[in-house]
Each structure stands twice: as C-alpha cells, then as structure tokens.
Image 1 (cartoon, rainbow, N blue to C red):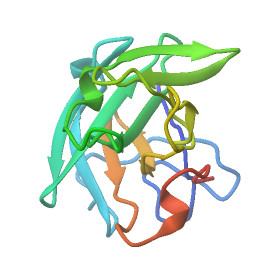
Image 2 (spheres, rainbow, N blue to C red):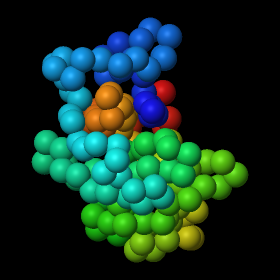
Image 3 (cartoon, one colour):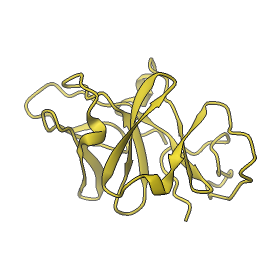
Image 4 (cartoon, rainbow, N blue to C red):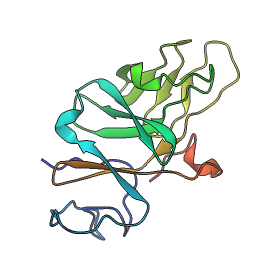
Length: 154
C-alpha cells in the first residue's frame, strides 16, 4: 500500500502530474530536498515518532486510516520538543494532535491550532510527506516561510 499525504509536486517521490502514486526503483536517487526518514511499518498507528532532519526536530504521525503527517517537534506554546508524544486523534474527520504540555490541539494537515486553551493562537509548521516502496520521505518547509505554518501545504 502506498500512503501519500500533503504536498504533491513534480519533485515528490512517487508522484505523477495527476497526483497518482507510482512505484519507483529503490535504487533511484532521492529528489533534492527530500530526506529518507524510516519505513512506514516503523510508525505505529495513532502514535507519533520524532526524527532529526538537517538539525531540525520533526514529528511524524500515522493516523488510523493510514495517512502520514509531519510537523515540527517543538510545541509553539511551551517551546518543548514534545509533539510526537501528543495524543493523535481527529475532530470531525480532521486529523489532530494534542500537545502533551498544555493540551492545545493542532490540525495535522495545516498546523493550525484548533484549541488555544485561552492563549493567543499559534501554529506549528507542517512538512510534506511522501512514501515510495514503503519508505517515508519528508521535505522540510523553510523555517522562514510563513506558508509552512498554519496553512495547508497543498
């Protein structure tokens, strides 16, 4: 099964112009900007996992329906690197993670905070994820790019 979520562009592994996943040769080079993270089977359903990509901490999530999401690992409200330890769930079909620190809930598709717990809204940066031959790839959203936080990367 090929799982593909978030941004689909010409450089996305396993992407075609129509957005339909296709298998690629394992020996094929990884497109620029994409980083191999792990195998899909390494990610537990409804759990998060942390990874270090180019010195940046990210959190990967696998939802009950098999979709994969990546966000920054840093909780914007506490500054702690804990989002991968949050509670994965959904709100009316929207995949979410609740921070284990102050319990703010973030939309895994956009990074928008859905429940600020009485604080000013902050968002978490989201990153495109692709799967090719059972291997998970992430393309980091630029740190200075406002579109990477709080907006759907598609």
